[in-house]
Length: 131
Image (cartoon, rainbow, N blue to C red; front, top):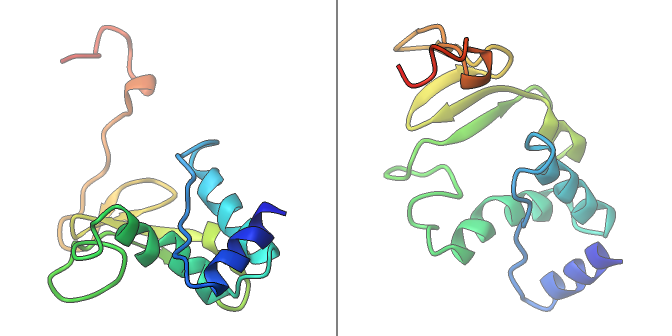
């Protein structure tokens, strides 16, 4: 019902944006996108709510939210077209942050500056943390 209401607001000219906060290891954002679609948004409207309209709401649409010259190079590479199936948003193969490309499965950096990732803090021996 909430997603249908969001679609009605969108149709009335209100910008609707994603509101997930990283719950469930980042799955909350995907679930919210899928529910927007379930509520009647097209896949394109759904993706816009999670990208450009969200950036606009934060006042950051000049820097993020779409792929344009001069904007930050933060993006995800998907293994399926979300315009054909919105659930393809969860099929992330690579992530680019600050222009550096990472494999989603390993979080190793690939491309121009290949590097294996170091251990996360929870993977370290307690004596290693803080070194």
